[in-house]
Length: 450
Image (tube, rainbow, N blue to C red):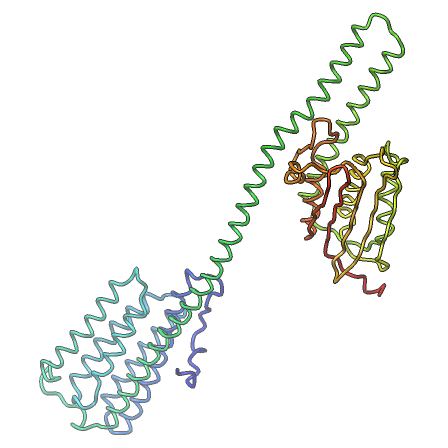
């Protein structure tokens, strides 16, 4: 509103950027400094006019006002905010009352009481409102006394002509400017409060959304943790109990028949292998949950080949025909560790649950790239997944049958890894015909290769 005055630079007090608690307090102190400077300027201008007009006594009042206003400004800038405000408002009320009593009503000194009331309301904090009430009431009461005594509470004293029009105009302008600065402050403060309220509402809505998502994740984690503790304790103790039982049988075996001992050793080895596999799954689950995405350059055909080679020693692998169709020729940027783990687990399952009694058992792996989405398809000629099992395939510790090997964590971890990479996974299956798993992940093309 009054930008042409450049009064924003009249105070050295700094507004806090990120502290809404002290923001209003500092803004009020800055405004008070501006009020004092404007008052000093107005008093000096009025004093110059009074001197040139031949009224040095009135000029002394003007200079006195300019002096204590500048003193109030200095105290405020040095951090003595309350002291400076009390001093300025007390002396302003007294001086204006006395000055209005010794000059004609037409001078318009009483006009200065109005900005004094406005600034006494704005300048003090809510906790200091007793000062606001006191000085506002003082200004109003002194104004009423002047009106009641026809501006002559001390008797007839006239230091100026009865019609000083220029002095009246100057006092009117000073009052207008001071009140305008106060209104400008309130307007800016209101705009700031509305803006902060809108921003706060947006932040609150965003935080509420994030909190709801985190609560959902936390609930999911808690449920999984409960299930994990129960199932893990059972799956860890079962093979250990079995091993202890077998060792006890060996102790009780009276005749150390090599074939029986070898059978017992095989059983122990089988239990230890299963336990080792389960512990590996737990470690992989923990690693996926705690490790951030780590991208690197990957050649997709080589990744598929590595996964096939790692599973080539599984018992049924030699009875199965493997085919690949990799339609990705350029290196891609992706999370190699997780992608390999997902692919490895799907190929491993395709081999374990394949039906080698069929004439031509197979496992087919394909990969294609479309709009920076890499899609893998792993198909097998296995047993398929029963209808009642479909909705539980990706659940933690789920096994389709009691005879199913493994920890029941494999496909759960697989899905978690795919989703961690921002992708998706689904499957299609028919009992006794086979299963097709498809997973897609976002990737980035290697610019140097293209």
